[in-house]
Amino acid sequence: MSGRLIFIHPAIRCYKDESLMKSLYRLSLLLPLLATVPAHAAESAAQPSDWYPSVYGAKDEIGAANLLTPEGVLQSVQLVKQGKTLSLAVPVDKDFPAFRHRSFRLYNIQPGQQDGKTLGPNKFTFNDELVNAWTGVGTQLNGIGHIGIDNVYYNGNKAADFVTVDGVKKLGVEKVPPMVTRGVVLDMTAYYNKAIVPGGTEFSVADIQAVLKKQDISLRKGDVVLFNTGWLELIGKDNKKFLEVEPGIGMEAAKWLADQGIVAFGGDTWASEVYPNPKNDEEFPVNQYLLAKRGVYNLELIDSRPLVRTKTWEFLFVLGQPLYVGSTQVNINPVAIY
Image (tube, rainbow, N blue to C red; front, side):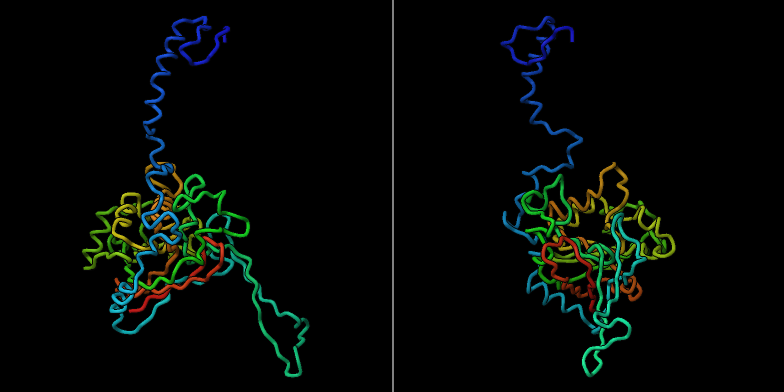
């Protein structure tokens, strides 16, 4: 570098280029000011003072589930008029299309019964199943410990402090209370007049409000909000497309939904947000915002078709998930009662 010493300090006079020294000195005076100005490119990055500690307390581990109350349960029970029930889950087998690296494989094993053997004088036989699978295949609850921002998760929990090979020590699904609350389904297929809403379609606040008005309902604190897009119709017909793109909410809608005080969002897609992101190359920013920053749960691959067929726009939503200690997501079979 032609013998120049690059060392920014006004007391140093060892530069061969006096103009360079003066420029660096002036820059050194600006550095403290520049350090306080966030770069535009970093607007979506983790900014601790912006999103933690949680509004529910610095030690909170259940996020928006704090909005589930006995009063809310009693109010939601009033939605049951016919006593009918609907499963909101999809059946899962080894052929079910799963996100990237995930898979599901079930094996039936008959211990001690090889070659037709039986147990005891009463010839006792039984079937037992072994599952080798990821917990994020099929209908699932994504807990608030599932998605992070640069290895920081809900309420400022750093991965190095709570993530182990045996599971998470905080924010596990075993901490999530039963979800018994009001469920709402928004039929986006009717809104767009399409059997399957095209992949990449972003739902705005205006879109959501229009559907709410059309269905003559409004959102309440503690709600579970589900979007029906027709996306499940692709399974078995075009699995490649099913996993490459999807319609869903964008950041504007995510912020609005969180501000309404919802407990969970989701629907019949595999990420519950528009994908790929139509505005930039960010990976799943809506999930980052809702789970990590706001503590709102994600319910993926919900089969909302039975609700739409019966025009059941609001219902009693019931979920008691498996309590896998240390897991951040788990397969579920939520039930709608109306």
